[in-house]
Length: 78
Image (cartoon, rainbow, N blue to C red; front, side, top):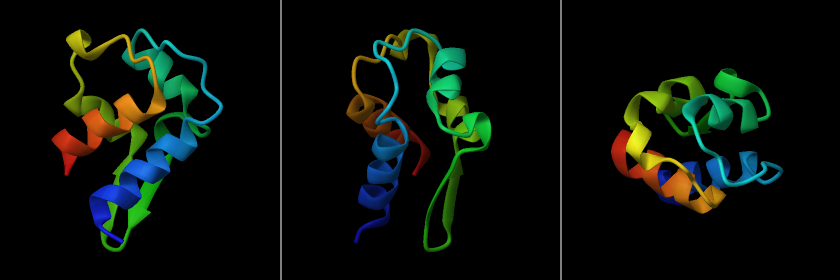
């Protein structure tokens, strides 16, 4: 499986229980099961939720779905 697809699937899965819309970076981190320490891995690639926040802008919020979060993070971080 492609690294981007796998990481996207992991982010989406990690946010499966989240309540949307998510209006801020703080809300997003709190929505991940282990907060900022939630880590998605594929091969040599590791992406922590806390690090992913560095690629998001205030204008990205609110997020309405987990897929939108995953698409945005993966497109900018990988």
